[in-house]
Picture 1 (tube, one colour):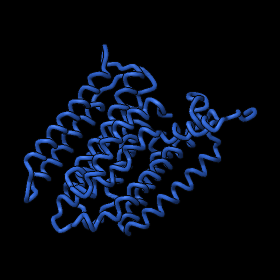
Picture 2 (cartoon, rainbow, N blue to C red):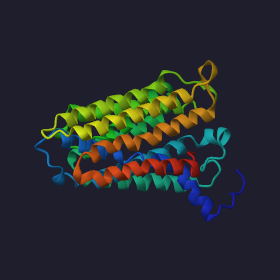
Picture 3 (cartoon, rainbow, N blue to C red):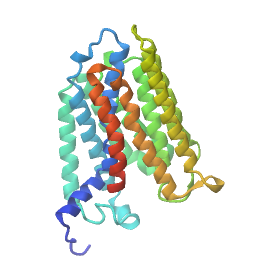
Picture 4 (cartoon, helix red, strand yellow):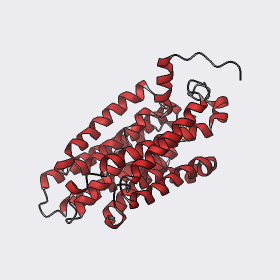
Length: 315
């Protein structure tokens, strides 16, 4: 293997930011927050002010487990990356292997500890989430294709339920979890083609269609409120139409002659689909006065993700 390269502190820090996919992290915390807010909108007996306790630990737990899964995935692939992607943080030894392993351990322990602070229901869902992360890394990803995409989607879909007690689940929040699952699955299928010129077909339509379904769920929930605000509903539907238009335009932009996309075009599409996610997650938070600040933070996170993607591209 030769002597270890001399790594400066700046290179080490930048390596960690690349390893954890900084632009993607800004899309994670909104999943459990949106799920909890959606339940509070659909259950008149549930007072969100009494349910804000799980918000912070749920968001941080999902973030810790997400990062741990990313690092574990790169540790699993380090042998192949030494040949195919030697510039990544682990094969280039910018981040030592044992540092990455310690990171996985401490992040997992922290995530589990935060989940235990929420409820027994969250502990059960957290266990499912950890099993899905391990399944993706060691079973589904080597298989690849639709299997890997669905398991990755389930990881994100399950995270939307972690702050919600099982007894509070209802149809809208389950549909929302399914939408997040399918959106992420479609995105994963597209991202699997970003290293080569390849045909991008039906999978790139999935995120756009899921935005339509998600907006329909939110609009239906809003209209069912006793004091339904048509002005807010119109804003919601306009936002939905804008995001769907962006997603559809992204789909068309990544298609060239003979329906084959270059790696650069596919990466652009993947990045755009990722940047849209915080905007979609912000809708239920913006509809509740107590969580408006969180919703605005998610809107801001979308712009920050665009900046971070240029400065710290995914590893």
